[in-house]
Length: 236
Image 1 (cartoon, rainbow, N blue to C red):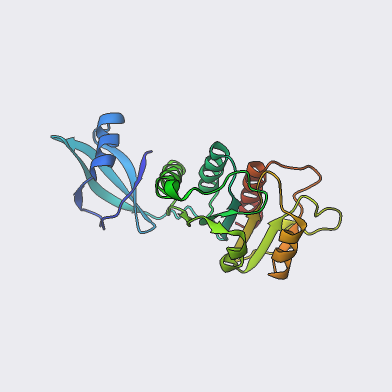
Image 2: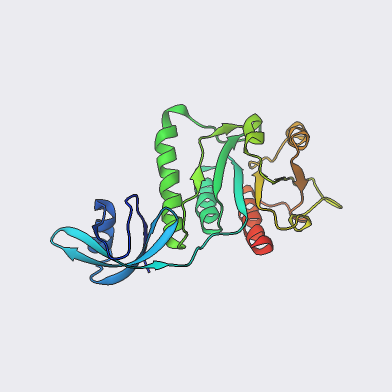
């Protein structure tokens, strides 16, 4: 079943005209004709009958969907900038895995750096990826993606529990399972080159707990997806 997020309010019984981009996709691409879709307005889902009317795409709101397809734990993923295709993969999978907020940041070992002249277009692309992924997996909200921030700004995004995945945190280091059903959690994932010891010390002094993800060294994008999936399994 196709899903679209709406910016216009709807109620059961309403007949609305779909925004042009969604109408084009529903009517011209998917060729829907009196078929049911899921529409979401302000985190609430509705089932609607979608059909063409001339060049317009119309939707009759049939009923509210009681399902709320979000995790109990509010996840903030602070993700270091990595190569474009890998970062975009993280965005897509983070949306599918229930992350509420993505905070891109630059650290000392980042190979990729934010370019001021491309930031606006880049942010639009990131938001489009998050929207499409959230529609595909039937979420009730689209994750927020902040502007690219500095490493030193990460404490501004702390939540109830705050952890940093660190490849040298081995042995008796804490794991995600050490925490018990946090209401919210911020996870920091470093770039391809990992964190410097000074950066880890900075985070620990800011009350981030260094955690291990196991004995194997994971790529940055793998670590991000692993952590998000583990949180969803452990705490939902």
